[in-house]
Image (cartoon, rainbow over all chains, first blue to last red; front, side, top):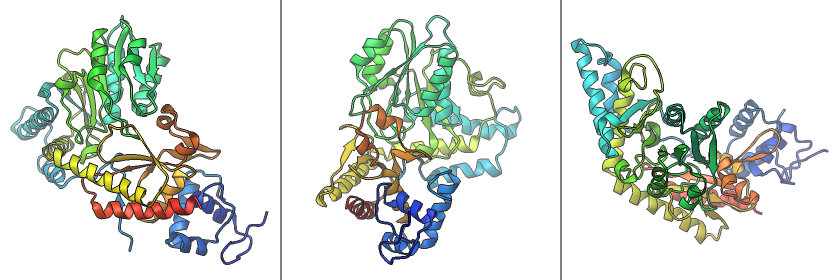
Amino acid sequence: MRIDCVICGKVNLDKDTIGINKKLLGAEITNYYCMDCLADYLGCTVQELLDKIQEFKDEGCTLFK
Amino acid sequence: MKQFIYADNAATTQLSKAALDAMMPWMLSEYGNASQPYSFARKPKKALADARAAIADCINAQPDEIFFTSGGTESDNWAIKGSAFSDAQKRATITTTFEHHAILHSCYAIERLGYPVAYLTPTEEGLITTPELQTIISDTTRLVSIMYANNEIGSIQPINELCEVAHSHGALFHTDAVQAVGHVKIDVQRLGVDMLSASAHKFNGPKGIGFLYIRKGTTVSPYADGGAQEMKHRAGTENIAAIVGMAAALTENCTAMDEHIDKAYRLEKRLLDGLCAAHVTFSRNGGDNTLPGLLSLSFPGADGEAILHRMDLSGICISTGSACNSESTEISHVLQAIRLDESLAKGTIRIALGKNNNEDDVDRIVQALLRIVGQEVQ
């Protein structure tokens, strides 16, 4: 199913972006943000989100690629 | 730039400057082996004796009742296995379902060897009661091991009363006081315990060092065979620097304990008041008598792991009572033991304030929590 950014409309968010949305906003969310909009929403940088994604991958979390 | 706030002092604590200063000489110039007979070993030997005496003094024990270990996990392993293996007649152990894994996994290990273990369930407030212990203890019980204070929810147990029950059946009593030593007053004479575990890094000492208090006259099998160190009960060349650092940290914390406790409760109140003022719905776990500064808070409908990571992105270190594995969200064994409702357990975090935290830290924690929890429940 195609998922777009609820703020800027960026289309077809990838698995890592959807995964970090679920990790940081809750597994039950229905609205998703692209990386730029999510970083803006959370008051952090995109790099910090990418670091988090890498940590989750290293832990074996299946929400990510 | 984000201001870093460490509010996970139940996981570990920052090494105190006094401890570091005390350790330095023993890592560089005074590196002698305390077991050697030459004069170069005299100073480390004296440092070892002084540290043992200082630590004993902090918990009202005798110096020869303090056995240095590598930390809380080793102390707990020793207490459980050392007492189980020391009496062929009395083989049973009683512990609780919400102990640290160092106790639980040691108990599983002796069970696999044929030693019976019974597990007490805490109340929903996180307390072990004497009537419950009375119902399962028998004259075949060798050891009762109940933690002094729970590491996730902070509930402090009625150790003195539980200890009396154990002794009335001829059983030994051990308490895992890793989370409590250096934070609340511990007097082993008043408590009546036979063994007590402690770990230096929980009270601003170095990592990799701890001790097991063993009351004089208590029969416990040695932990490690080899040299004559630790009164022939725990072989291995002593880590003098770490031992001296642990003694300095514990002495420092015990000297200023009243001040630290007052401050921790004041900060706790400020945090809870801040959440209440914003009309946030939450509950606190652990009952009325908890470790100073340790707050286990449950936010209904929230995701504890998400809160943890978003607090991290705000520069704030806290802990959670639930963690996601590849399949589902796993609730901690402690929250399961107190039968916390699943929706609350999933939204549980632990904030552990320490002596280095201040009002500004607490205000920032509250602001971040309000932002996160407010967004989460929208």
